[in-house]
Length: 95
Image (cartoon, rainbow, N blue to C red; front, side, top):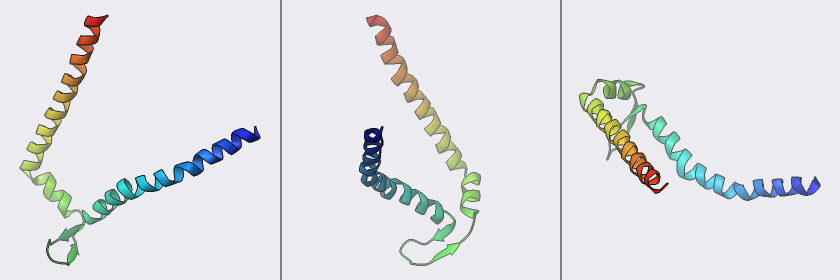
């Protein structure tokens, strides 16, 4: 029992560096981007202005956004369909 606890503790300690790396690479940029989405940012200038949900309102009203979202969904589901059906068909032929 004591050996199991020691091995478990060691495994958690060894995961600390990779968890730190995951947080730095993925979580920080995600949180930073979410925070910046509430600001109007002028690229090339250092000034930012808080505008709240106005960016999200502009996206929802933008027709290009909806067309792009529709195209992305078609592309995604089309790829999933092809990537699942062809190997499944080959597996059925081989059995």
